[in-house]
Image (tube, rainbow, N blue to C red; front, top):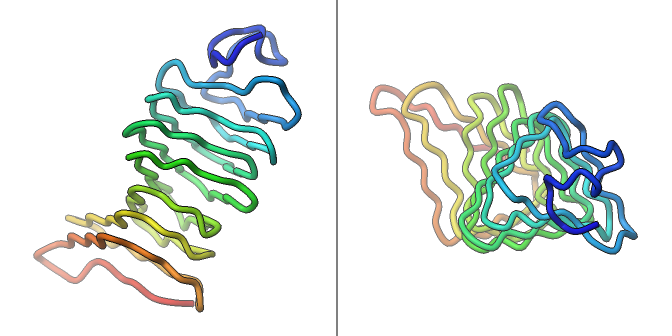
Length: 178
């Protein structure tokens, strides 16, 4: 019908997605969704040729995230991944947005050599970067707990700013290559 996320006729269930839903945005459609408010979904699969426009709103994915299509940011949106995320075959228009890696367990992240504005590691376990990427800033604040980041051997990570803020009580940020 149109691009409005909350418009029921745009969805195959004849209702807008709920926070517990797994969303598939298929390719080959005449229009693709744009957020009209901050949204949370259980999982998302943006297929090759499809897109999701953030339109100034934040987006959270709690479980599965596969982005073979496009995510388009236009401002300072926050995209929070609480699970593994894979951008293989996809694209990302960064604007001044933040990708937050906020899994509760080990988190596999394939940013597929895409360019991001800010990548913020919030995960209190291990984030494994399975590919290189570029970002204006890679940020990790660990005032308590331990943050671990593992980078794929031979992958290139290109950054303007690399911000690590650890605890004054102990060494609690670990960087390594596989």
